[in-house]
Length: 149
Image (cartoon, rainbow, N blue to C red; front, top):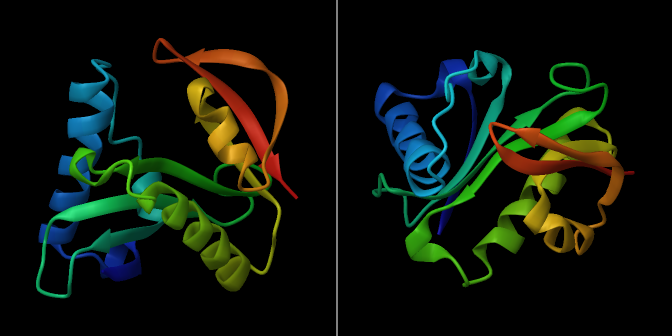
């Protein structure tokens, strides 16, 4: 497996296409949730993703990483997604562990905020996040804010 970290300007057109393809296939099609996937935040995010090897183009797992102040007051992880073909393999856990490490390494902070789908609360708790606030709806899907300090 090969992990890639790039800011928006470093991504090739093909890489950005493959990232968007996975995000749309999961968040819009699979979850049956039409919403504006292109929110303008891609241009300020770091894009962290896994591909099978350096010659592969299929994105296996992906997150957007934000420095403090760009999304929330804290650093942030968003658009967390694992390709359906790679679920239940531990890749989601590896993705979050690596994303936390990247935020600590790049932004020199361990305080991270996420807006997580509620059904994933236990998953994020296992990575040191705690629920803050009440459940809210985002695009018709229940979410909660969580912070890792």
